[in-house]
Length: 166
Image 1 (cartoon, helix red, strand yellow):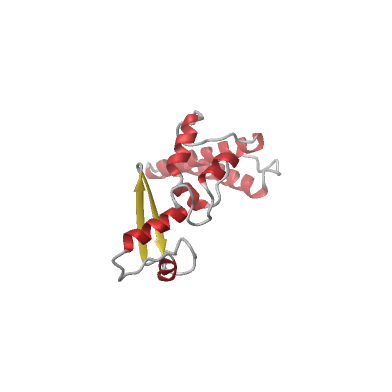
Image 2: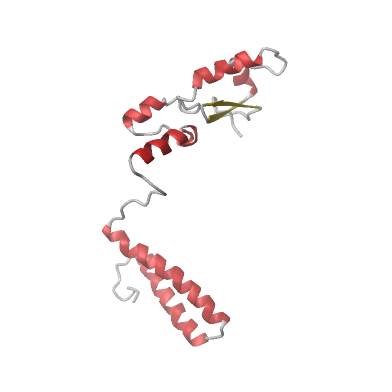
């Protein structure tokens, strides 16, 4: 695992801080740990560790430096690590907005056909497996031909009329 500060060296310190049911883990290489006053031999580590979390805090991403208040104001995260750092706040905000379960979003009209074809293809593959296992080879051949048509449709981008699946 790489250091959360320099993103170059392997982390040798894994520091966790828990506040108000929120846990943040920061991974530090030896150089960055020393820069923040954390040493393996030091007896005064607890004071130095609090400095690390005061710098990044639960209100700031340790990788990109994006602050929670900026994310709330602009509605955009800074990096992929922000999702894990601010997970609880994001979930709380989405719940307040009425979001429940995974986001499905809207699908553009031209993609609905492709989505349906993919779904049909999965069903046909299962049917093909069933037909072969039951030794219904004629039915399996028809299903295979339909799968080939769907595959050609995807390869040509749906431009050819003769390749349009039925």
